[in-house]
Structures are given as structure tokens and as C-alpha cells.
Length: 152
Image (cartoon, rainbow, N blue to C red; front, side):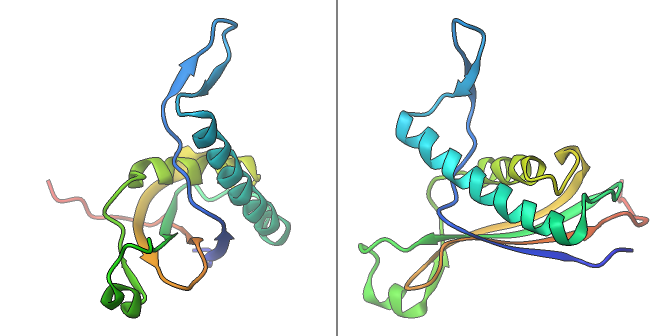
């Protein structure tokens, strides 16, 4: 088993949504221009972090990969003082967690760290709001190629 690879990705996590086919055949994100810009900024941040990890570890050739991800968002100013003093809360609003994970997987491939995101077979993902702290994501990538027990 290979050791874990840890990434810290600063920025504002953005979801990868649905695609729309344009009349010329191109596929683009269905969101607004602002949403597409945020998504492109986030996917670039993920790709840059993946590229730096690629420099150190090379392309991950493990047959099965697991991800542990913590997405960190800024806490809105509208939160009560008690919530801000706690430092973090679960983020129970958009963006959807599955769309954040989709953008992360594609960014890891774009940065060359993963040959394909189909190798990801196990994901533990959380999203929180943080007060006076960095935003982005912390990611741990593990070799998941081991026997598993499946209850039927």
C-alpha cells in the first residue's frame, strides 16, 4: 500500500454543474458567466495543487483511490456571534457536495495527478463554513487497493 498524498488547495470551492451543448457543438457549463468564472478559478486552483503533487509523486497509478476532502467556505457575516466564536459550522446550503467532488476529481485529472477520476472508488467529503480562517479544500488521497468486505 502506498502512503497518503495530502493537498491544501486555497481558494473558494465551486461546483461543476450540468453542461449545455451550444449550436456549434461545444459543451459549456450551464451556470451564469459569474458561476463559470468561479468554477474555472476553482478548477485551476485544484489543477495547480495536483500539478505540484505530481512533481513530487508522479501520476498516481494505483488501481483504486480513496479521497478524504474537507471543503472550507467563508462564514457569512449574518451568522450569530456564537457561531463565529465557535470558528466553524456545517455548511448546509449550496453548493451541493456531489458537484464540489465532481469538480475536484476533474481538477486532479487536469493537473496530471490522476490518469482518470474513474479510479476514485471511495470518498469521504464534508463542507464547513469557517470564520477568520483560510478557505479552499484539504484533500488526502490514499491507495484503496485492498480487499473489502461487502455486506449483502
